[in-house]
Length: 183
Image (cartoon, rainbow, N blue to C red; front, side):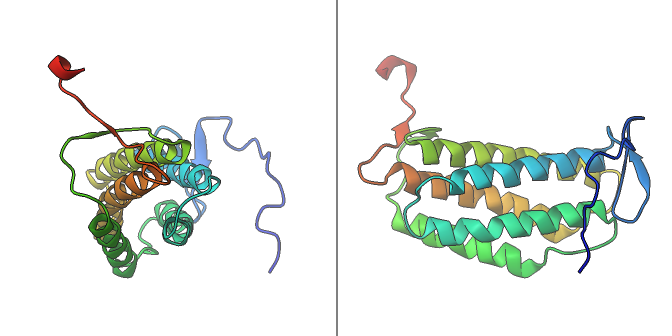
């Protein structure tokens, strides 16, 4: 295989447009490019979370997400292509349920934080929700695969549960919301 990126600085985006994988040029302000950027940010945040020491089974559950999110970005860069299948949706739904089953039931809302790893996973969860909104904005204008929309919806649940596991590592560092009269 040849080199995919032989030149990084191309200057082709200086006019406010960028190229899609098929060669079409689109405005950098388009909903499609916005969604691609959101997915890229989420992928980066999962990389930050994976850079932390995480309890089992989180590393094995989170590492495939980066590949799947890269597939999703590729799907967005190639309108009409479907790279993220229903198996990815089923995998994260099952993983989320397995993690949830190992956690104590929630009695209060959880605030982001607890440990550095948990805080980064909560941030990834919030960005996952933003990604989903960006895809729905794109879906209002163009066709977006149902699996991609479902994937991001389920992913925020998985990241929430993963953050809970990370916060409970060692000692229970989950931070619960307290009513104003109980602070």
